[in-house]
Length: 537
Image (cartoon, rainbow, N blue to C red; front, side):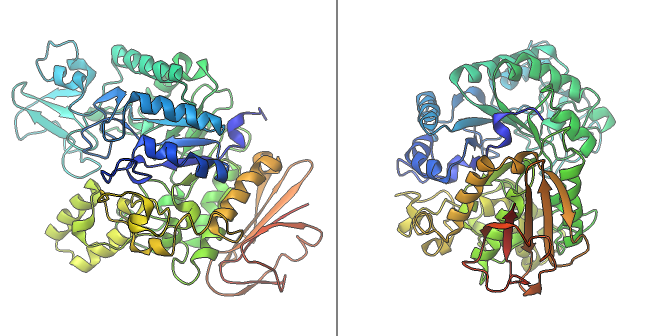
């Protein structure tokens, strides 16, 4: 297996708006991240994935970029970005930029030009179709609801947008667009960034006339060209976000020859707790055996021929301890269990800000939410006759703002996030759940994550061990082993809140306990609620 630095690395995702505010305006910023670099150094992470900080009207929280080579003033300026890259370097931490290449903002200069006339040189930077007002080219629906087609009366044309109306899709079939993008990526590489996360990258080769958005026929041709022109000119970590990734596609995205990306973000496990064929808001219990099957397939199918990202949380997802753990009486135990379960697998783990503290979902009133997807859904479902209680249950469980509430640093006002009024309400439980109370506590969730980061560096079996699922049909326990030529690692997790028998006593007889989520083990043959253990020989 080719040794790459990112194979034993752990990445930490920062959602800048909610991490740390340095100037009291209620919005997190780059200087705030610089202030907290010691904390990240203490955790031991190797890279920071920074959600978008580019110049943007913030229609979709920065995923609508108006200038790829400038910083949104609320986050700071280019000098602050360069200072952040330099400060992170002191801690051997690399900065991964979030690249949104499927679409730009409608306030990007390319689009402002494109709208001027059909003959404008920038017109073909976007996807246009002729048509009549009120009769869009087809009935495709956007990710945030509504039609994917927006009428521009002065041109008598529609432009295509898969997301918000303020996020027109770029036309990757135009070689000039691709060249502009590659030059911009090289510019960031010159600034010293350590990698890129590529937002909805599987949608760049869309063919709207055929209603193809994901995995268009030219997708891998374009990605391979981009990789040759940019990524392969440096020692970067690159990760493609691909909601439509299968194992076979993942082998292309993360081919060990480096022709596309280092690794892929796939989401098969993330869609399991929703009703079959419905939306994420249509809640269903987690099918535990299916979770085991899905994670196992991703461990075995791309072994030695691809590379996976390991994650429970990100800026689009609810908090995992509230989702699949127990955020009340067993919050600490279940948060550690979920961490141990994930970090023992093969792939590059991603920790989302606050996950290492066991931060939870926030149950707000509708007027306290800020997310465009949540607010659109509230309106749509109200009109469809859902009760307010049903809608709010879905939002409390799955709304994106669950992951976007301010980072909980300490028990002072606004959790130490800002001296001003935070852009979104702080979760009221910050007095109990905060970084200050955990950093020096050897039994805290933070300390468990720090230990997992260290273990990945210490034991090669975390990186190259072959995965085997144990107790495949057990309804309570998620257990597996990882084995290479020198070592065996066994991870045993009680996924639920009842005490159960531990049927693997023989498996672990001569093994050393590497990590557990309870202070001591009184009875090796039983697993307490949410108990997790990691053994090695």
